[in-house]
Image (cartoon, rainbow, N blue to C red; front, side):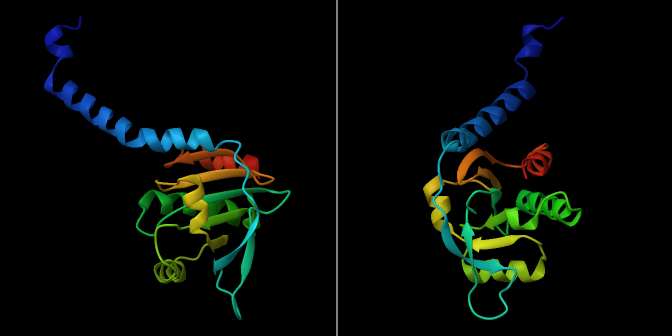
Length: 172
């Protein structure tokens, strides 16, 4: 039987406060993600940061017209981003996801920091410099993953996802 003393214990109060704080800090990001479902992104040319171009500047069209694509917003200091990108890398290397369908965007750091990170970490997908996309979508948390179908966002999620890689493999 639960007594009032057990119900209002210090550990329960502390747990409630942590939960309330997390909900308070994450709620704006979660609400933004729901608002972005169905938003149409116009295809534009963006500078490719990785794989490193052989000669001159290389560009990519994002989102690719008439194709499904995944975009992941990341940062070099973000541990969960590195884990998500490692899972995407594994799926690409195992042939479960085409590398041309994944675009990684770091809207929080400059080109020099991004390129230094990418030289040390080899990923098989395309990294583009597109901070305007993050501004348009109000991306404020990393990792944030977009599922894009023919230029339209079908899903936007922030944080690590237990089923995210499964969704990506089945979406592409």
